Image (tube, helix red, strand yellow):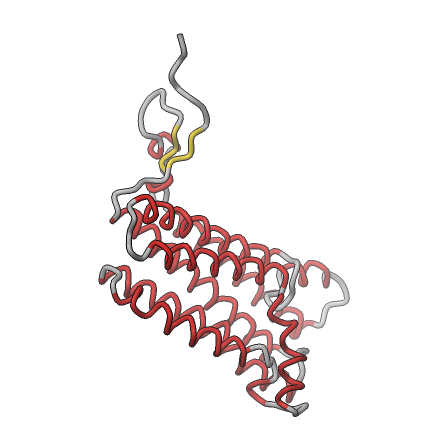
Length: 252
């Protein structure tokens, strides 16, 4: 694979604008995600196979089920990038007075909320409250009970955004729907499977670690597919994202 020089991403000689649309952002982010997941799975396999007495802090640093570590921060950054690109699309649509401009703006707010939640684990606050409302200590697939209000919220959002999604260009619609299915399949589906296993066997086993790895992998993949769709939407709109480092013109 040929390594591109930074000059290939710049508009031209002497210019100070970096054209982000020329950079393979999704590919680079996917490589980082793959490496983090691979390290996370390998470290958990080593933990349960060798039961080491040292290196536990390093293992936790890459544990896919822990908060405030490298994978969790990377996931939050992924979602924040998704928000930034969505905000740019929303700005473009607002400037053109597109009829779905408010949908794009709302979608951006939802993605930003997901980024904040990923960093602060706000959704886990709902677990105890929802579990109490369910009136049971052992609830199987609903052990991580936040998935109940989560599924209700997703259902309402799907209804409200159905017309918006239907009117997206075909390729963009397919990518967005796929991204949503993959992300929710991990965040909700695998979370429910892991919840049942957690209730029966606890978290200190490699099977639960594998559930966590599958969940985080699908969430990252879903966000990457979403970013890819948003960038495709920007290109289809004829918009380029440029980072300016200064004015190349001189004032007289």
